[in-house]
Amino acid sequence: MAEQFDQILSECIDLVLQGKSVEHCLQRYPEHAVELEPLLRVAADASSAASSIEPRPEFKAQARYQMQSLVQAKRRKPQARWLSFFDWVPRWAAVAACVVVVILGAGTGVVAASSNSLPGDTLYSVKLAAEEVQMAFTFSDTAEAELLAEFASRRVDELARIAEDADPETVENLSSRLGSTVGKIQELAAGIAQEPADEAQVAELTQKLWRRAATDVCDLGKAQGEAPDEAREGIAQARSQVVETYAAALNALEARHGR
Amino acid sequence: MQQEENLVRLARQGEPGAFEQLYESYFDRIYRYIVMKVRNRADAEDLTQQVFMKAYESIDAFRWRGVPFAAWLFRIAHNQVVDHFRKRNRENTLPLDEAMTQSGPDFDPVVIAERRMQVKQLIDASGQLTEAQREVIALRFAGGLSVAETARAMGKSEGATKVLQHDALAKLRRIISFKQEEASGRAV
Image (cartoon, rainbow over all chains, first blue to last red; front, side):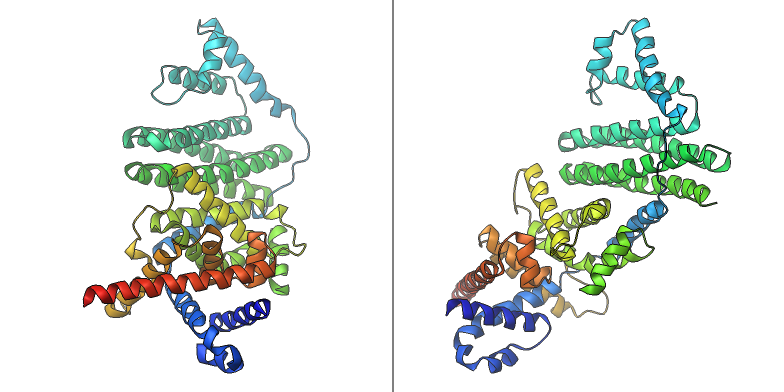
């Protein structure tokens, strides 16, 4: 019996959600009208209240633009075919970077320890220096773009880790460093798109950048949610910049691929 | 449903416009569902964007197999909200943001005020439901899901979902009636 009533209630709620009146439902099930009516009135009120919740038009427009940018960037996502010689360069460069830092006296332990450091930590400058050295030993545009994307992800990870306790200045500095890194990726992508290059290598780079962009944007969204109110705006701006810059970089590479 | 299944298949193949159509169909519903859960516009906006980013990122892994796309998408939204509260280490403590209902120039201020009251009443009353009851109300009335979709999104049977829906509405009614009596008592 109760099961039958739950079924009738459910059908009537569906009708209310479709815009039918409570009276219309009661006429269909007069034998249950007394029990149905108060529940359907609450359902109708809940439906009416919920449907009046609407996103701000400017938010909707901005969200649509950001989504479209990423969708367009991925649309002609190329398939990776094989790894070329240059795909090994970043690994080799990373090894070289460590060797150089060791020679300079920092020590492997220090470099390893610095990998988890955050802005404000003593070892953070070692982390950035090691990245500079890695870059100096990377000789192709595609390898540089990949490495920069890896560094950009590190900055995003740092933002996410400091989000809860971050002061606006630290967020601003880190966001600015992130913006500068993704800006360099865009410049390199524009260059790669203009120059003759190995198609497989470009395809592989495009795919990697797409993955980095999607992950970084999601992580920044989470970081934004955790940040105190005063730091949120900075992270939101960084996220918009990452979306737009990556979208521009990927569009350039995709346009080349589609040529 | 067939049309949506088609759109999902095309979106997975990277067909221009397919994901955008799904996005447009669900954007407002996901936003409403999230507002009901987090009670705050800024958080709801961030989370809504994250839901669609996540959905786009993982649409290749989506298989229809009896699970409707809506249930899958709202499951992502639910997980994002849970994750959000886990990281913030608090739940529903923020004041309800008044700016979340439509307030364009064409709207009568009295109507807007009434709607805001209505939304506030619903969200406040929902806050006194159990987690599962709150979920069924948010999915059915804010998300606009059918019982079958709600059941799949919550990982319950349709029968159990109908019982939950009945209990939730009955409790909502009691809470709202009590509040109204309390308010009229104060007025006298």
